Figure 1 (cartoon, rainbow, N blue to C red):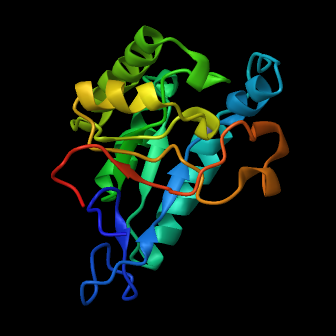
Figure 2: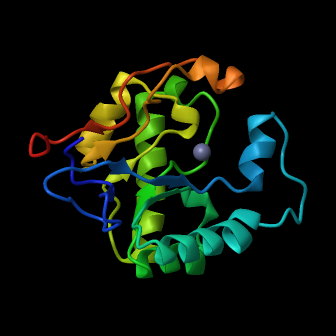
Figure 3: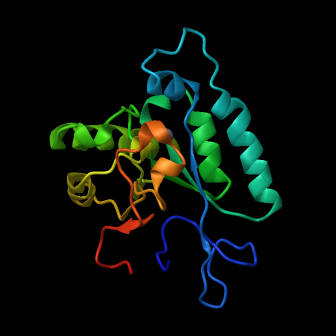
Length: 193
Ligand SMILES: [Zn+2]
């Protein structure tokens, strides 16, 4: 894998290349509890704590600091502005903040082109407000990839998509097996290899 987006992991633990060899990227999907409720067709009860931001993200940031790892965190736009401090802290600690859609809707691939474009745009703007940087990477909810997604991302200036599952999804995730793919990162711009 020779792309330069998201954060690359080298054998030395530096977030770059080692002797021209890159091992891969480390990606975190910041899916808070409400995502899991909605994936089961339920709405999260009022007062559901944002445990991903309150507990998970801080622990991961400390862990990554300890091992000098720089990762890519995919965040949902609708968690902002409530979690603006958490998202800003991810960026301050040197990690890439990328777009994991606005609403993390089930069946993302089945949304219309206009709906996808609007959802990506809304999340991208929220992330840019929180971090000061326009996100350049995207991952569809539940790896729900579709060809027109790449078109929308290209039009919106994104550089890569990470919505493809690297192995057969059926072996890992029975309820989300609608797309089973072989690649993990799909460069969008011709400037990437
Ligand atoms: Zn997710």
